[in-house]
Length: 219
Image (cartoon, rainbow, N blue to C red):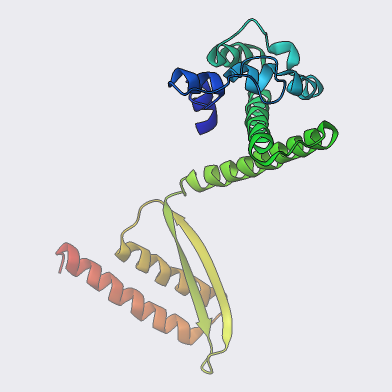
């Protein structure tokens, strides 16, 4: 996004733009040596890159009559889908990097190798961004209000007899939640005929009810 914003505002340091900043340099393109290196020329109109744009299918949308980068971008935005527009921007960025590698490192890869590599890079990046977006969207889904309670019954040796969990929807106070958990243990003990557990849970229930009555001022 930073790259395309710089392109839109003509902040990419191509030679013609540098001359506008009073730099005394030769403005001819380092690739074709025949035309001035404007931003549109450096990214989309240079003959050295026409094979790339033709093979990926964007050349018909790039008009030589448009001499402002923002006009090119707005024109393509009217004709391309969102995914194709993203691919176009990505290829423009990779072509700019390729140009810099040629100027500063004298690297000039063959198009038959570079084009598949560039498309694969973009596909991998887009897939990665989509996965991150999906994960972000999942994290943003609010949980249903409520709480989980559980009950465990063990024998006198500490061995597990039965366990159960349950989700209670809605907003509950701590007191109500604890009471629901005791009731759950009581129901579990009844189903499994655990007499000792029944006695303990009934005592806990009575104690909890007593505390609740004290809190609300009944006793």
